[in-house]
Image (cartoon, rainbow, N blue to C red; front, side, top):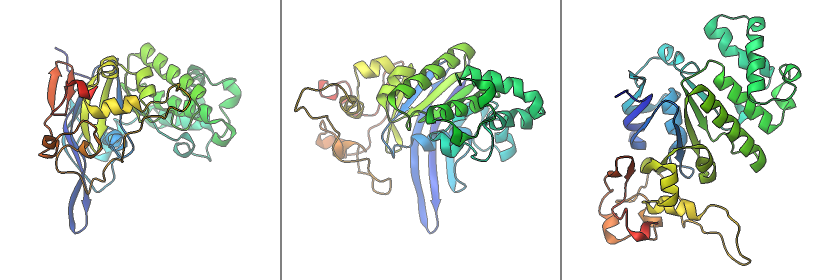
Length: 326
């Protein structure tokens, strides 16, 4: 059996603090990504989604301590030095950042920013890289690409800037495209266009996609598998369609019920009470228990262990599978 493209096993991330014990911000994360597969990582703000993304591409803060394993095509990434990680970033894992206006350099023309990876890693001159840049601009559907190649970021709309970010991530033809909240700052119509572009590119190239979002609608539209995070740990993992149809964890169920939808006059949108607990003050048992409408006394006795409901569906909940969890 072929090894997965990406294998994450028991990943934990601690942040060192002067005079204090390290603070664990990501705990016991394991998942795999096959070639050509699309994986969605979902959860509220504070769930650990972005920190996980930074760990995969080796961009964690200097005081971060990682344990576990992250293997790309069998190569262990944790513990690599900066030079070795530079050979991974862009070339093997391309990243689309959340806010294109801050991710792009305002003082550089967008064409030069797309070409930068080609110039630095493949030894091309900017003139030699220009045909490839034009091809990428057309591939991400930038209209009038020959004119827009020399524009600055502030001269482009939010959707166009995000397309530039996608083009930068694709320039070196990576094996994995890692997209961290790529549609957050965009209106619904532009969101749909960006997701369609990403899906088309994944199909064409056969790359793997990891899409990080707090929006279940985005995850449902663009991914085959879904990993649900909460307060730094995983609560559920399985096929997106199955989790949307039959969630086994009350948190996943709550996220689904809270999705915006057409409502009757006077009807109120469902909300999960409370908020994600601070990592410095986690509850003694299940991390979601204080907000869970299905909690029982046993939920506070200790953190539930991870268990597999089937070969490709896992959950962290002592009540998983009960009617109340749907």
